[in-house]
Amino acid sequence: MSRPFGEASSAIVDICVIVPKDDEFVAHLAVFGVGSEIDDLPTLRGERYPYALTAIGELRVALVCIRDQGNTASALATSHVLNSLHPTNLYLSGTALGNPRRSDLGSLRISDHIDHANQWVEGSNGRLPRFDHYEPPSTTRKDLGSFISDHRDGRRFSNLITPFLQAMQPDNWEDLLRKINPSPEMTHMVTDNTLVKDIDHDGGASRATLWQHEERASAYDMECGGFGREMQHESGLAWAVVRSVSDFGFDKSNAESGMRTASALLAATFIREFIASGISKSHPRALRPAQTTSPKLSPQQHYSQHSASDYFANRLSDEFGFSLPVSLLSRELSLGDVAIHLSAQGLDRDEANRFLEVLRVEYFESKYLEYDYSLDIRGYFGDYWYQEIREMLAWYGYENLVGRSLLDVGCGNGLEIGPLVEVCSPSDVTGVDLSRQMLARARERHPEMTTIACSADALNGIESDSVDAYMSLRTYMSRFFDVPAALREAYRVLKPGGLLLISIANGYLDYSADGAPHVVTGLKEVGGSSFVSADRPFELLTRYHRQIRSLGFERLHVLSKLTDVYIGALKPGASDARRTDSPGWSNNGLSVEH
Image (cartoon, rainbow, N blue to C red; front, side):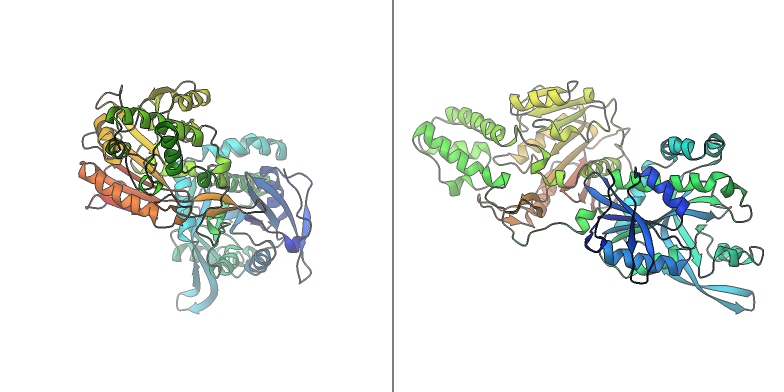
């Protein structure tokens, strides 16, 4: 749903897409679903930039047209957008002139590096450029690189622009689709302080000089230098240039026949799809999170309301007339450890074990049976945490798990199976949980999956060497969980070369008294308090790494992302899915990304 901002001076958006020309702006409005709700963004210098506000999920997106060309115009517009709309992510979009040796019509060219020929000087070999250099932040380039690797052939973008192209170019849309090759690529871009009409006055010699001096460059535009110069001084923001090649300079007939429309649609579609599913490290809520200065969860927060120590102490007292101290139950104990303490109080050991198993199921059902993402930091970031799972899987070459067996240990009510069924068939998934009620909820969400009621430390009914991928999302950090026993079971059931993937939560979603959401980074401290330690996820990670390695797992890899910290490993042995050339692999067997 699109809507104008109202008072622009007070508007704050998450993402802003800047386009230079009116026809490019029209293409972007179509792709982003904006109708007639266009407003003007006034400036102190008297210009009025047409703009509109729309939304992708929970992210507020502004589209701004500067209605001018050149690096000076783009620098002024970028500065004004930063000061009036306060976005965390800015993208300069539109069409570009292509290097015929490195581009096709429709090619999507995304800035890895910008070379701005700020001056031209006379030399013995003629006029030569002096370059200023700008590059987007590493987090942005990493997100773009991952997204591009998933859409390398560009066919998705061709398919997505087809209905818009039919409406906007009804006479030749099919011919345009045949001409374009919208393969995306991170590349060098070049620009200079002259307009294309000036740089063409010498028959293209100056442009040829640019291509010669920057052989890696595949696109030339007239605005990326001014945009890059302004953004280079803005720390903590994400930015990039996205252009689609509409012509090569020496023959404008393609652009005039509708190729500019097709190219503008392609650039807009790339950005829209990237915003919808590609942003991770450069996510607006990571760059500008609503974080609290207090390391303590509020009393009404879900995890404050559900204390395992208090629950167990109260239920033991109700059942047996005695209990264990909350201070003892707040320690990092397994269920077997608690049973030993109860037997020391005179309770039969077997009876203690049986009751504790029931009690643990009761506790987790009370806490998670109705759990949804309105209570979770992953809900705050939308579906972007799906990309975190996909990135971890891709590192090991497990991008496609269709036909492979996947074991989800601690699947709960099935809420977290969403990202898994994107890479495999639900019928390939076996969910394990202590609670039969939780498993019933999981089957309601995913009827084709198989479920088994058992504990992670005793995977009864699952044969040895039978599982291709073992995943456990946020389960190993649970209270009264026997991590060493669970890891031994994981090793047992995995096939040789099978993947182990574990995640640890790295934050909570909390709400202030006025109902505003904010993020509290870290995990609750041991001891049943509501205080959150930013170091605790990494303390657990270090411990799990040591235990995983001691069992003989290989190729350990750690990934620290927006919502969770991940650790992966492979069971020794051959596997079709194994990758020996994974990025970041080191001889000590551990790879870490942040």
